[in-house]
Image (cartoon, rainbow, N blue to C red; front, side, top):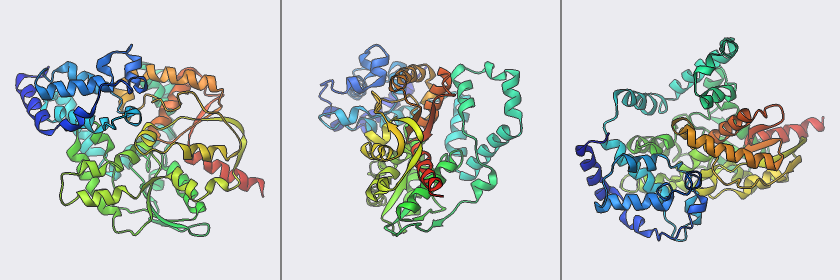
Length: 446
């Protein structure tokens, strides 16, 4: 329960921090409504739409309503997919408003002791420290490789967990060893005629749990003609912090990353995770009020490019790529599409692979329900959205789902597991799929 004191503090900060011009930019036209998953899944409840949430934010600013639990609940239920932004005729930056509102509420509300301890552990103790991320991943690896995972499955202990959590445990990737995680390159030469010098944003989860996908990405870049620099002082992008009401910690991570990359003299900074890339290109907004960092953040932003975009730019799709015959569909990463505006390039790459019968899935641009940790904290809505996504997958008759974000990848694997389709359907990151195509062609030529 939010106390009167907490409501007063939240109200005051809404008045001082919320961008009223941006709130007023919303014309209430409703163009955003069909694009909003929570509006559709909630039975067209206005308060669960972007327009409705903006109206609630404005009402709090104007003192018409109190920032109570109902306001907090509707903001928490938002996926933050930002599908409303590309369709908004006024160009409202809804994502910025949402993050600011969540941060105000979180910073002025006293959480219970267990919640405070969990948030401190995750946001301060884990994600900003890559060594600790490696240790956590190593524990998972021991669980997977020691036989303990098989024993847990055999005894049925997973039945004690919620269904979605038990299914998620089964679809986690086989993680690398500690030695593999520590033995990371800082520089890689081009394996073709050099065309670009780039830096690679390796991320936190991507360079631990999804390390093999990072390796695949860098190999593709090398074959496309890129010399690659991987700064060792880079850190977590801060997206989880920014989306969860921890903006100050997100700003600290942003400054670390800007400093890590700004003197490298590279053409681009390459990302392979849609969620990370979207937060990186928002660094200029995150630090806009900081005189020391605002211009540096803008310079950083201008160099961010998704791996699919640079591969198309360097004509990688014109190489001979081949895979075993399969029907392929693509699930957009919301943030890659809606924030970075990258959606044609992944399709161009997939359509160029011999053996891949590409089929455009209906509503491929609709959120899958992953949204960072949303599928954990808002499991019911997430699974409802995922069930509808799997209906579209079934209609596509695909045997391979390709996506471009680790959260989306796990969510699609979860959907496959829930539907019992593991023997006939797989989900794969686009970097891993393209590497299959590159190596498949090499095998054919041997």
